[in-house]
Length: 349
Length: 122
Image (cartoon, rainbow over all chains, first blue to last red; front, side, top):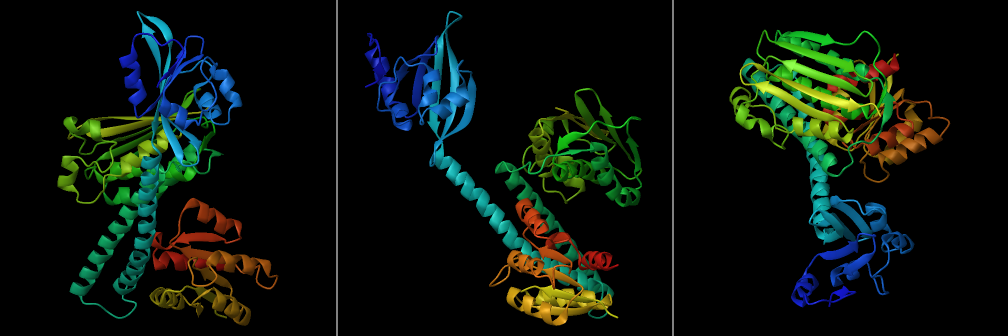
């Protein structure tokens, strides 16, 4: 039976709450608990009387104090926030204001058990990460073997043999790149993204990536411009390896999907609050009706697939996650056949 | 005099390919198939540099590395980790234990590895 102070005539209504498979708690406008259903009682292992108690008092209860930390004394609204109640019990908590004719009556807290989903998710990421490592071992062996053959260190090859060995080397390289990207995605999904934050010079990070692409840019006869402000950029706390990866993925796209004789402009700027980065290309652009999917996992635009078979659609997904993990914002403008500009901002504080 | 490199690697083909490349670059190469043998050969042959795999049968590469660095006879020999483990925790652990570089096999060509080795021996 639903535990409620004044049981009114709404017995049917209470029976419904009683039968819910999610935990449910209602607080009145003073922040005192006025209703709790059996599932919620079970979740928090509540045996004593808690009705009428204020959420602030939860602070003293080992089972309830994490809920108090999440919601605060004002019982703020949250949407699907994860809460580990104890080992082997993870909830997704949602809290909403209960309004009647514009006036706040109290707060409703919904507790959804996601322990099983989390366990499956973890198994999945562990599986991917393990198999990626296992795959890397034979692939790196193949890579070195093909390298040794193609450089004719074990004897001369005919032109035909050399061509085939080099093709195999390229395919192997693509496979390794795919595995690397998958590992990056797994890290993102495990939430292990930002490992080492250090106070760094963002200009240097971009510079080092830009330098590593000079040869590629020349090969494709692309004009390249790097615009930096005259005065030094303020230092910023970032994971430099991850940030390099993000800039590298963006630059890689702007080269790959550009046309010979095209142009790339990288611009860096700083305001008092943030660092602004943009990279503009004169490449193939992204078709308008596909633009909303650009940051999705495995997204590749139809025109990109037509001209280039390489690319696995993970690059921008990774970039977006890295920028957002730094509390930054990323967006873009694009016109098919004209080019694309990606922008991101990183807050200084 | 030729500089001596000790390659501690359990995969036969990888040992062969590394040996091939390094020998061509003018190094003398010693091979060890696991950590135990690596430590043994290290004492006998006094290499100028060690290429160390991490996933080895018996004692693993991390343990080999910390033993190298604990022994005053070998602590000054530069060690480059060469492994397919590449999570940041592992890289950090390797560098903390005293490796001078950490190369993920899949990310490097043999020529690039030879170049690193040369750089550290200059």
